[in-house]
Amino acid sequence: MHQLLQQIFSGLASGAIYASLALALVMIYRATDLVNFAQGEMAMFSTYIAWTLVNADVPFWAAFAVTLAASFAAGMAIERIVIRPVESSPVLAAVVVTIGLLLILNASAGWIYSYTLQEFPSPFPDRPVFGALMTTRDLGVIAVTLVMLAMLAAFFRFTATGLAMRAAAQNPESARLCGIRVGRMLAIGWGMAAAIGATAGIMVAPVLFLDPNMMSGVLLYAFTAALLGGITSPTGAVVGGLIVGVTENVVGTYLIASQLKLTVALVLIILVLVFRPNGLFGTAIVRRV
Amino acid sequence: MAPILELRGVKAFYGQSEVLHGIDVAVEDGGMTVLLGANGAGKTTTLRAICGMVRTEGEIAFAGMRLDRRPTEAIAALGIAHVPEGRGTFAGLTVEENLRLGAYLRASNATAGMQRMYGYFPILADRRRQQAGALSGGEQQMLAIARALMMTPRLLVLDEPSFGLAPRVVEGIFAIVERIRKEEHVSVLLVEQNAVLALALADRAYLIETGYVVAAGSAKALAADPQIRRSYLGY
Image (cartoon, rainbow over the protein chains, first blue to last red):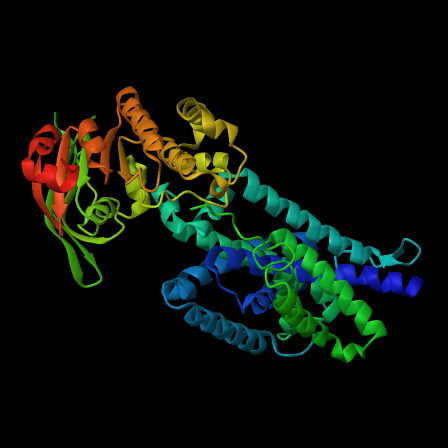
């Protein structure tokens, strides 16, 4: 029983990381109807930036803040430079562009930083808490995710820019008629997604060790989480992430060899698509004609 | 009075095909101009041309400024509020959020503006927390007009506000538009199928057919024209 609880709680911690990356996917999907296959590699690249800063003796949280800012700028630049030209093309063209971006980022990271595993420090101490059910590190990761979600929710709900971003995603033409610069909103969305992804990368690196392929598995779990949550719902992404994290951990411990854990994600994707294509939180918008 | 909006020799294109062949249209400052014509004549395209939503040639002037070649959001910022065909409400957002978006460029006085709109359209106050998509057609049209007015525009562009609505609802909406035009000194450019109603309210009218202006003049003169009466007024 104790072991099961332990597995569930450590599943919540990895689930929080999947949730963050899923959140980034959902942001871009909502803004542009596009699944960004490069989201994981963008996060990986951001993590290398943080790693470089930490190695240069920058304090951890300062490095974290600088990385987030740099990722935000890079995300905006990516939208401007490679996504905007294919904006009005069929969605497949844009998807292929994100796959190209994935390959470019992966190869450049390997070229710049090599494919050797690097140790990455965790900002949280590693002490058991709650009768050894969890570690303080798990708690820290979960707390970071929840704070980020709360900040995002507040941003979209209470700020004029957040509202304008939602409007631009829903009805770009009407948004323009309200004087909203839709292109800029999309760029901000990409920037925010990149910063959220960077957080996920920085949180997962102490566990997985840093290397250019670090995020490939995480991205698959994040896709599953986003899909489970309904692909358009930020709350859904977080709940989906936690469910995927726990399921993967428990199934990997009790039912199948842990080397086969990734199959859990694939099975979940198929189950969601067959039985509940709208996910848990994906609601169709009410429309009366 | 000088016109606040003037189109001179405006052509519009969808891809390679020319759909407006050089039209002249004007809206008097504080006045109401109506565009009449059959479906597909180019009325909606004329409105879209003004707001930079189609490729155009020719000259479009608004309050002494050239509009052509400006992006849509910049034209909105100059003081033109456009309620597009199909109303263009944000269906997934609440009534209040829709109104706040109308004040996006003038965020400072959003609350006061909202109160004013609830005065014109009390039903929207009751529905303020509901998703716009759940409103009835008439309520959505009111919301679309209210959102446009939140911009405190100098020119209100309305594309078939009566579309799909019951006659009594239409009359109510037009009565409010007329009241707002006088109280807030907003000029109005209107596309409308209901020619009887539109000609009764407007001061200028244009008849558009297959991309050409085929008749223009005061609304009274057009209403008296026997051919227009037969084709568009039905008596």
